[in-house]
Length: 242
Image 1 (cartoon, helix red, strand yellow):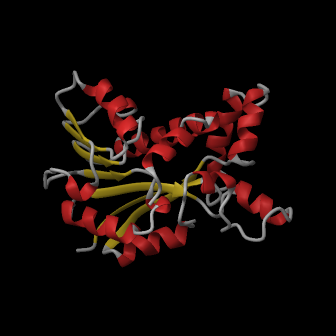
Image 2 (cartoon, rainbow, N blue to C red):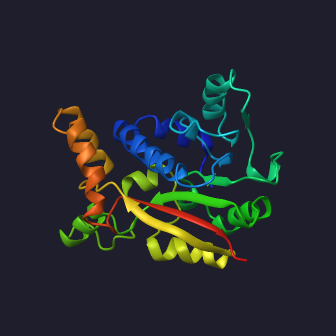
């Protein structure tokens, strides 16, 4: 598993990541509005938990193992009695047994043991719980462009961004669904979002020159409806197989 201190420092250097994170969490929030989302558990909430985007809940339990992210987020929730946060890993947390939604933050591709995480999540979930996650997409437009341009030999290669975060896996829609299936879940919804034409570093450069405007970013987000499998990230929701 990656070092949580290094991860947090690298995460804060990416200006484009800030923009992508906003679209990512807005996508998740829009989905939560379509399902029963009264009691939520978010695992690996980072410094941008779901309550910044979705506030229509009764209970929100947060788990964040990174000390910096934990301290930042704890300072933002002290006045909301509906929210608790624990600075630990999933197996160490004190949790309830009636969650409507469990959000696995975008880290399944960053660890060696995603199956163990899903097994632990399954122990917390019930048959009505919707489990949500999001991971980078191997078939992202920018990866396929790099492949067809001869810049990489495989769209499953680890990018510089992947290496900076110590990532272990590169998923496509089929492989992330297979991971959940093997762990005792069935897919409810799978999708991709945000058409990213270039690497994170190149997107950062375009932002710094003011070429990449908010309107263009919004357009890239909306374009995933026209290229449904080539968004830069995968969204998956699932439930325990009865």
